Length: 490
Image 1 (cartoon, rainbow, N blue to C red):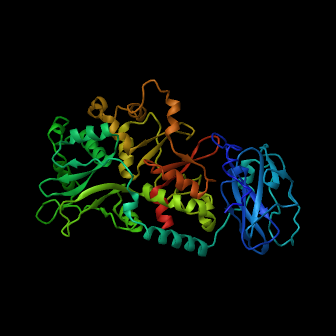
Image 2: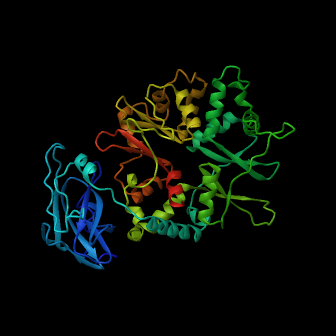
């Protein structure tokens, strides 16, 4: 908890990081203690960042924080008492005596003076804040923050306990709507309904069986569009007028050879959650099924008849609960304060000479739409970064953009002739400049903390963040909801 003389609300307007480039700065507390945290104007005094003890130097604690250019103040919370480091620049401020520093960039080739170390020579320890260091130089010279495997397991245990103690019922909003589709609806009509409702998927209801039997998703439409584009396909655009969802699902089973010994399609099991299922089980169901959502269904009868569709549970909704609970006690979970490039998380663009075991898909805006659809299926991803010739992020093409093809029946066009740029324009105002579309791209930096990344991924509709290089927006990697949960749940 913050001391009473530190009011984060009063100070919230002091530093604004929107639109600014953040770079990592290493802070050090060399005066001992059992539990040490740091806070300052660089994080609006709204967060206590835990400092880790330096191996081999029990009195030294260090932490790395993302800082914008400019003048900043900071203090240390040592064993519950606010203190400043007398050996670093300090002044009387609004919160008493505070340490200060001026973070100004300098050319990367400028020689840097090494700080004097008042510790034994065999200890590789910094004794204070590194001043006036460019982001490039600091990233190369600064040691990567570390966390022990025991701390990782302890954090995972706490998260697991929290998820097991809360149920899917807590995901239900106070108000809202859930759209379900009849399996006897024509595919074309379902396509337009999803487009008009602004959703990318919906549960399927079978009146003859009196139950929910599956989900119609953007992936289904991708496969349908690919079938329409294949020569020799038995499904024509005209047949979409009468071709039902159930007929498509049956045809999809034959196409994927999901049939029994008698040649009949094998019915797929619907992954769903009950309102009393705990969030840990719901998360595992989503991960194991490979779907974006699972319906939350309630039935008051023992045989499951007369089911009620309450909600569509997603990993982002579960992550929002986690962030809401742990945000104000993140100091007790040091893993949440680590930068994402310090933990095994996400898929990264291979460097020159490196190989990658996981595919990393990117496209130019002039690429044919058919290439984007193929990548979404083959790479099994929810979105693809659209980049310029320098691999700088321009936009993303996601599965949810598929429904925009319903406008003006654009899906009837040759998908090899339509570019990704043209497909993205379908979902935008024709007067909107293409350059401004990048505002909808959800991005993060490799120096962002795991907690910050989790908060971004908890935004409804966001399933992946593009990791970009500060300043140039060059794509460096991707981190997804699935990545985060596989890491947190071990």
